[in-house]
Length: 289
Image (cartoon, rainbow, N blue to C red; front, side):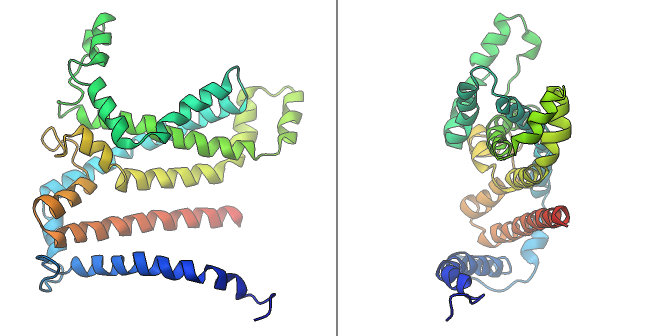
């Protein structure tokens, strides 16, 4: 084949593409197949849409979906905080290298480690409530882990703290890649930090902001298992206050031995993630046009 052939680049990625298709494609096909079967062991009879009907009719599943939807409330907060912190680091304030390391640290640590530490801190008799009591803020002393009204918000706070670090990393990387000529010109013309950020920097970060929003949405749907598993004691507790879709799948597969039900929920979750990814590509195409 000639070196200038348009097919040559695809030949280089063909082995890896084949491997990924075999590993993930085969698993996905089996997952969809299981969702239409009453699986016992490694296989079972075909039952059509009965697993989907069973799942959609369960109040526990609807509650898990509602909790995941509530987690979406934290996305705008994460974006705003990460954007402001990235802009401040970009201005190279005194000690910005140390501050950058501190802000990046939560994303380096494993989620279970962070969750275990936070669970100890937010126990009713833990350091957080002790400090609040010492500051005469007794009205803020809450059972952060053991109260069904507060437990999900505690998980939100943990997610906010860790996922903000990823936003700062992405936004700061985009800022460091910008041409500083226009920024310097605006500074010489007397534009303040707020005007430079709003009219020059943020418009050029639109693509990475959209990307981070979609990634955060997928995270709230399908990457919060470790948070709720540790905080909720592995049961989505107290009660079902921290039950989310991933934990529902885990319980269906491991605790109640219903692989077909777990597969049906997994397929629905996968389809929603595909819709979000498709939305990202549409946004990127519109921006390019």
